[in-house]
Image (cartoon, rainbow over all chains, first blue to last red; front, side):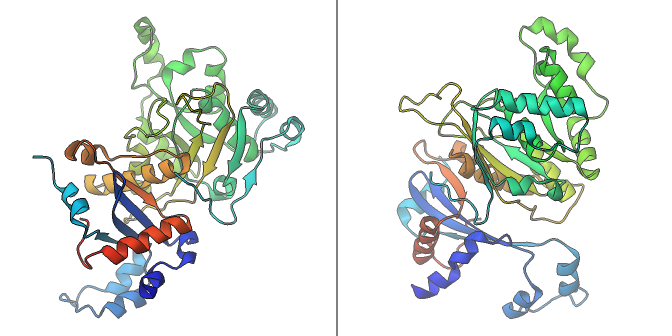
Length: 88
Length: 293
């Protein structure tokens, strides 16, 4: 649980460069979204990505463009997850 | 829905009569100065606390101010209060053309350099004969874009009409999100709150509360071609934030149409410790790596 606490420290709520969103369906919590604006290049280095196209200059691209990294996680509770299905 | 304001936001209590009369308005002429004061005096007692005014200070121009729309009076009072606070610096609000037919209101809208929208029909329909007088060569979006690119801010009541529902926002129009994505200019979300009586209807002339949020910066690189998918996501983010600020729920029209009748999807920015606890709970229940999509 302490690791999860570290995922969203209280100071994140006041930051302009990160936003957490709670997604609900009716009264049920369905998932979370995290939007990270202008993520630092160091973060991408940490992912250990292997660049398939050597012509792609990731650092240059990140510096020259406005980037937002969006991550979404869905609740695993079946009663909630089933509601995501379209109506037949 | 609980609301916690950003730390450090500057709150402004109901303006006093003396404060309205004495507040300097250096960025406009004498006539407009007294027009703004007059409107603010008219709204005295009708506007309560205003939070987050620092986000709409002239130093932050240009921005797109995006608000909900609960009553007709706020279309005059909110711009007047904001212009008073901004020392007379205009925010160019979009406004329906038929209001310009009303004596006095037409003058105010003209002086405030509103962006006239001619989409709706007039009531009674016979007044539509006057509509061509208000149709301009450039579209509403083009005129708004010109203001933004000129460093002037634009105000949009996202719902496009008065919405008296105390619990839910209308699906809203995507113009603010479109302009923001296209120009890269941030959206300042704002919620206008009315006191809610037990019966569910608004209290006539009860003081409005205005809660102005932090700027929402468009997530994608600026491009003249805006993808529909990006537009939907950005519009949803803006509406959700306006919903949080005004205390109403926003439901994606597409989602709600494909969901079970008793299920409603909402997206709300985590803003207080209760929200943070909820995020942690969801993270705990989550299958890592399974995307909401």
